[in-house]
Image (tube, rainbow, N blue to C red; front, side, top):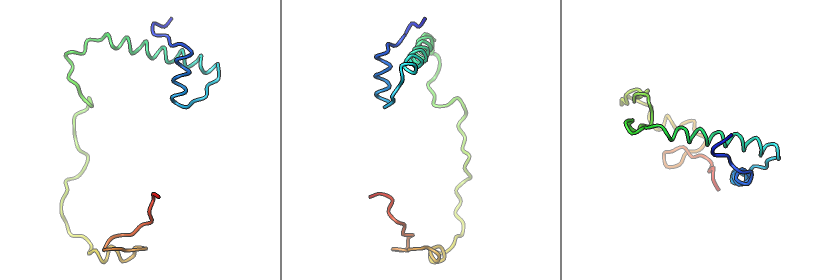
Length: 98
């Protein structure tokens, strides 16, 4: 038995928000599954986390990028030589938005 059992109406409301059409069997299945999730969240809420610092990740912060180093490159004219279209010394590409 679920402590936080959802009603069929609540499942229908959630389905409507998610724009899902559910069969009666799916409503019953999701009612059970979502109720179990809420029960688990209730159990987690009982844990004392006061001594735990908030964090975005439990892993140490590190970068996988190489250092940014200035080095010689091609001249702009060489870079643009094979471009399909150039405008104001830049690549011109077709618009992607109307």
